[in-house]
Image (cartoon, rainbow, N blue to C red):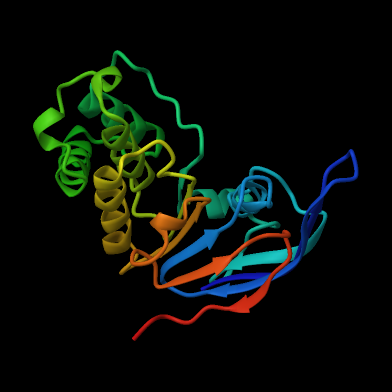
Length: 218
């Protein structure tokens, strides 16, 4: 369970991006739907420990995210809005490199992880292709593959379907929905068409303030 209690964030210029946000999110897929500038990315970065809130507390299970950010990062998969990789490197090589960075040092162990993720994200047939040649949807699926390294308990994806055509968008969202059967997945988007079927719960996010208790769908 991911818990946010009274989370606020005020930028140095006085802009209040988050205002007393309280959320309880169990395993499954949780979506935030709202316009650009509503504070969705600020919330994502705060949960991902990339910035500290001005007030409030955040926990994942028994992990106090603000007091133990490194502990959270070991169990976090994160796909930011702007995801950059080395374009001339193949998908297989890049995932193998990222697995090393995640502490998977054994070559045989890495091979199992990389091959499993490429199959799961339907990228096995293009594993040797340079990422520069990927379509937008393929790049986003690769982003999810790298986010899944290390079996994270929390996956955060920020505006992942922007720029994708409807077919690629549906394929990507169905992939996320399947992953969300076992972990907490938080997805933000401003695209209304992305919201109807892929998440167990969607909530409109307009002002940076929210209080809601999520429930796993039955």
